[in-house]
Image (cartoon, rainbow, N blue to C red):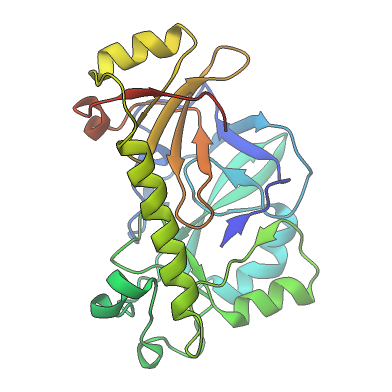
Length: 256
């Protein structure tokens, strides 16, 4: 489940304190009792659709989508309110973590689920394997969204019990080929500190699935290569993940 590419993109405002829970990892644990209202701002203008994009990857409900969908998923998620353009929107913290991925097959055939472990009344869920990066929606949820004509939801079929295994395998193969192409590019390898210096000089640098460059306004962008379509998912980082500080980087083309 993702936001449509034409949806408005939201990002952190400068007023959010560093210790706020919005910067944490959402791993199926309730944080509602410790949550405080914050404000998000527009990073990239787009259409005012019902499912805007937020750089952290967490689903976002507008007042309209919340009003329609909350009653269907309230037993699977918690809603964390925030302000955006004088309205209350909601981050959707998915608490419904289901260990239903077939680990023996998913590595070689893409995403393969054990249907008997997925309750029939499931609408959205995460799995322990990829809970930091994926939110899955069932056909029930997709049907509700489409029936109510909500806009901005982008559903990519990742598994079908009959014929979707080959599609997932091909998608994973293309992703691995893209990573191999990035990692095998010729040229000098250098530290994170050197990488940041070159970015400030207008260069673009990459390290495995990560990429850094400046936007047209000179703001640092951090991109992560997406497995589903091979494009970069860009955000303005409030902090740099520590794992990137020890990586080796190299120059790449500056393009999105």
